[in-house]
Image 1 (cartoon, rainbow, N blue to C red):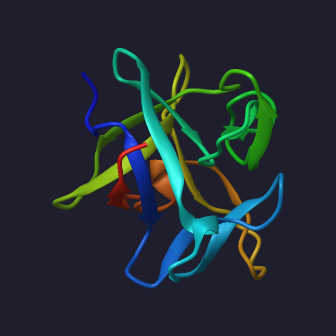
Image 2: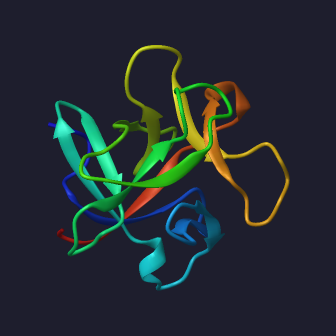
Length: 144
């Protein structure tokens, strides 16, 4: 059993910005709002691996994934698919009620965090823990 129950969540790195889908392929951080673009379906897929997708009554759905192989700097995007392109490990973060979102699979531990290029809205990419704390707050919205 994983760290979180399946459901619809809002995920933020702080109290001010949330993971947001801005179009059919882009995820970024934007100011927190009551907005469906900031809601994501989190489901345990196997063991302690999860899929993260946009809630949708239609299939296929846009899944949160990394673009290409899991490596430092790989961009985090949405990809429409019948099945998740990538799975994630959601593990206890550095603070209470926080979690890290780590690319599942072998290799170095890479988490979802803001990109290194200072643009607005920030792109998200896979980054190592040496580039800062990327503990996410998961706010449960409803069952999926």
